[in-house]
Amino acid sequence: MIIGLDVGGTHTDVVLLGDKGLLREIKVVTNHSDLFSTVLTGLEKITENIDSSKIKRAVLSTTLTTNAIVQRKIPQVGMIVSSGPGIDPEQFRTNSYFFTVSGSIDHRGREIKPIDEKQIVSIAGYLKKEGIRHVGIVSKFSVRNPAHELKIRQIIKDEFEMVFLGHQISGSLNFPRRISTTYLNAAVYPLHKDFFNAVQKSLKQKGLKIPIHILKADGGTMNFEASIDFPGQSILCGPAASAMGAMVFAPGNKEVLVMDIGGTTTDMAVLLDKVPVLEPLGIQIGGYKTLIRSLQTHSIGLGGDSVIRVSDGRLEIGPDRVGPAMAYGGSGPTPTDALFVLNIIRDGDRQKALEGIQQIAAALQADAEETARQIVDTVCATILREARHLIDQINSKPVYTIRELREGCFVRPEKILVLGGPAPFFAERLNQVSGYDVEVVPKWQVANAIGAALARTTCEVTLFADTEREIATAPEENFVAMVNKDFSRQDAREKAFELLREKALGKGASAEDLEMEIIEDQQFNMVRGFYTTGKNIRIKVQVRPGLIHGYEGIAGELLSHE
Image (cartoon, rainbow, N blue to C red; front, side, top):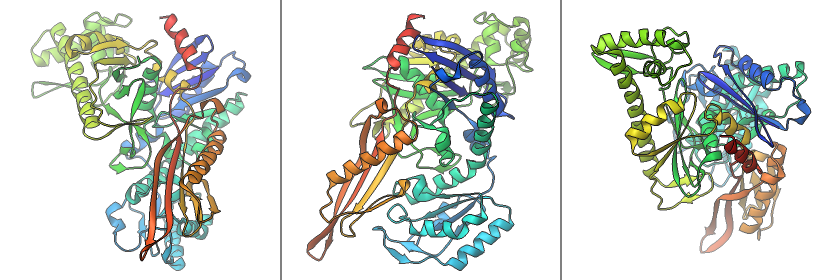
């Protein structure tokens, strides 16, 4: 059995999957002030009277880190950055406690200028005095030679609770993005650690011995323990859960637009032949461009529980949410209340919904039903406009999926798959006004949790080799080895795959799901005078994100019961 749990802005969805399909599904109201208790309540309810030894794993998708960044509620951390000549790190300042220090490494990993140990000690003393507990360290070209980052950590490690190193966070050669990525990992670390400890403690108290995984923004998963060292990987995993949930049921040979219409937000993604489109460079969030791999998604503050206002005689919906629909006991009218007025939803207090919509109708000088139709049409029009924006963004640059680069591909979806709480209630109108073939995903209420449950464990490895210096390194893996001058590109590929296999199995991947591939393969000759003196090789490999081996059987069972 597998548990999938997706923390949404309004509800937390939890499913228990078995060989026979969906065994249990529950919804828990998300308590944003006590998110981990929300998760625990969900886990406790879904495992009630279940033999925990039969549960293979639980996959959590949480908005904790995403919300903290977007709402600018992340704690202060220290950043120590060395760049060397030719670039001013101040252009990439991330926060108040950002210090540029002496020391430089060149593009081949050779030390040009050593660090100033006294300067580091002085900065560490100041940060400690200011109450800073977590620090990020980044040096330019540290992925070619991490010596300076390691040396700085050695000097300050006893003064702080956690120190993040840029070369371990990402093996990519992008200095500004590595600074932002390291900063965000350090900043969300205490939030993620509290969440981790609370979940582990309570599971232990309940006697639940379940392997826990965290969904990542690229649709893969990593085990809970490993996530402590890379908490930034959990950013934007919510929209990824939606895409993976739709992917389970998406048709092949079609371009599909996915819309997860929730209570607070609508998240969108695109599938090409059942494979999500990827943002290859990394997430951009809260003004920070990062190296965190992510599905290409678009989220807007519009859902079934969005606040409705009239401003200057115009109808405004969202982006905020202050509670449930009035039909469910809320204090203000929402799009869900409009659906009650139109008799599309009937399981709540229609009279309360009508009272709320009448307030809006009075301001618009219209009747309640006409206003309700206008609200539903406005929601649909806004969602479709933003969907076109996402498609335009995808088509403005090369199209990457989580499997491959689709050269020359121009995305033109003809089908929309809708999931989320109010999905079927908006689907009919979207079908009427969009020109798309709109279909509701099976088990639409919990499809995102199903997607999280069925996502496979993934990771990546970057290997560098400099045959002139006779050295091969994989900085994120703490791997360093001496190689011969005839070390070849093929040797590098084989070593990278060997490291990837070890890493993936260590993070909890199943051997059946080790679908490995090369995502970057470069070799440059190094020339001195008129002679080639060596090769500079860079190989990046990954376990492809996707659904776990055998998911088709579970999906088939789910479809057969629709």
